[in-house]
Length: 322
Image (cartoon, rainbow, N blue to C red; front, side, top):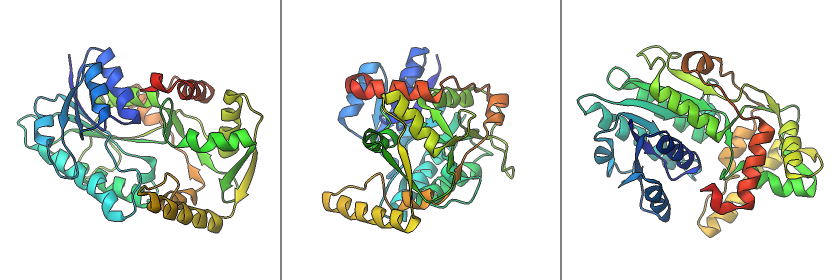
């Protein structure tokens, strides 16, 4: 019975991962801020330690007794660089220092993002995730760690891709940021969870001064063009393939700025914002998971059509997607 500490367990990926660990006979301690969703974790059988990576509260308590640590908690959208850095870099630092302080530090798996590399980050989010990776690398001589960089993660309960695309799919018209082909790597959430668990169990860890060992790109092994993604989702939803219309990048940036203004009035940061628009400038977000397949035994099992169908089924019955 392996004892896992999971940060971000109340989120989209974390809730699926927690279920998977518990179903496999492991135990889960979740470091989480107080919310109604922590009750659902307790109902599943997870232990919950109330804390906050932005302040360090509860981190030492959560780390105690953990045999494996999977770090998912992250700030995905924010108004300022400082807000990204507070969790995606400084929160990682607090966690890693707490791990380094125990007599036998447990193996750490950091869920990063393709936005962090291998190409230089184009967004504040990507730069903050890369900074978090660097913190883990600086402690690699003390804390055994692995970094995963997934592409777009989708599936039941996913909060961004499908909610943004479906209204346009129903209208029959989808916009694309910029002109020319846009390519993406995607991975179904349960396949990513399997990769996280594999990385927690086996494979080489980071080595000081070695930028490659222990770092894995995660996707389902395919390269998807934007129009292919839209067409596949339309088919899964029972609609005709939509017309894809390119939108000039200046118009994308202007729309993102307007969305942020509207969000500010409501006290929120919208999923479509200026930082996301920066990422939309890059036309290639693909990766090759060959290293993860070879060294971790990662075998993505879900096709894009299957994954979209399951995500749509969950949207039709939201209570089953928790």
